[in-house]
Image (cartoon, rainbow over the protein chains, first blue to last red):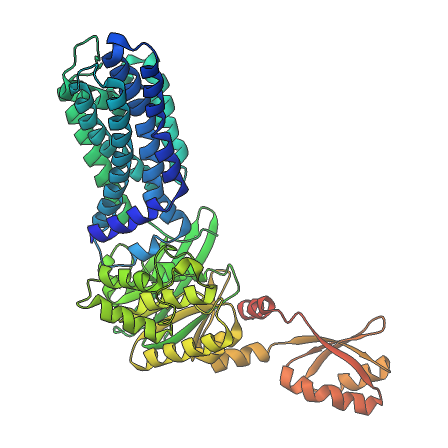
Length: 245
Length: 312
């Protein structure tokens, strides 16, 4: 059942303009990498790739934006246009529907951000740097995609303004407020992702140094992902359809 | 169909003093009825609360008060009921990228039918959509979408079928065909409830009718009795004739007339019954020696008919 919902949702996402736009945005890090290589890159390739390309552009911007747009399209758009009724009117446990939607949103997000990271990372690092940092970020991006997708699928079930709330979370809470109130970093998926990238890639501290501890980040990212997915399944089981007068 | 007092325990659908409100707005207000196998029409003007009521019966909305039971189960929060219940929603949206066949097969697969392909072909045949089954639903007309939605709802052979404005967008031939399909399904012992704001649709299909106006159950029971109530209500007519004063006098002598008013160039008549007045008007004109130029019924909108049913 979950596989049916997953394939249906992937087909839905593939047909949407926002997926194409996101795939296009995924090329921006490649453009940055080409410009970097065109200049006198020298020994700074690893720092540039880790700090600016993978963490700055992809973890901080492309990842949350892609996850937000795809996760809200996966479930929120069905709620909006009313097609969700064709899933809800079936004798299927609600968690299976959420699982299918979540896996589709995660899969599509991961494909875009991982492809973007691989292509731009290879160009930036070719012949210059340590490949382990790229490997570390690929692991972190796969995990981070899951956490963001879970959170944003839940958002699309609790508010009709999921896009707005998600943007505020990713680009105000995580991007701005964490700079002024460092304690807030402990509640930021982007910080968890960066920490996992550091642990998995094991770079030198001057190449990349995350702010949070690895164990804490791994535990928190598992908690956020499972709690959001569980809440989304619960929310869908109590979900009410119908037009308010 | 029966009212709540006479609810038989085997009723397929039981609506028990159900209300639903959104903030301060009451969409459905203290409605009770029970449905047994057969076709029942849910009639009411737009915005009367029909969709809210159907969504509560389908288990998609929780009543703010009261209870909805379908096949013995509480409707809301019980996905198992969909093994035996189906809803055809009013909204047109389907998965535009799927073909008709894929859309119905998706429904069959989600019901985990033993042979989803065969069930899909049969459901498409029943709604006469076999020839268009391989086209994407995004290119379908409104009527075709409606039929493919009905096929997807029929695919698992439900005992209870709920349809929200099912004839919207269908041409007259498709409408008749769909009506006879629903009629046959009712004869097979299924419970079918469909909503409509069009009197004639309900008249053709539903022997039983529930009339909902402004969230309340205005009338329920045999359609013929309700139709009679509707036609027997007081009617107002505006008449233009060659001699209004004499005509007014003659009309006052008619038993079916209980009010006459002479206005500027017209006579406004209030009559008890439509049928009786239809023969009284020419008779009075003959008595008065007046020629009738125009007899115009006033306020014959469906809304005013419903309004009468609520306030009578």
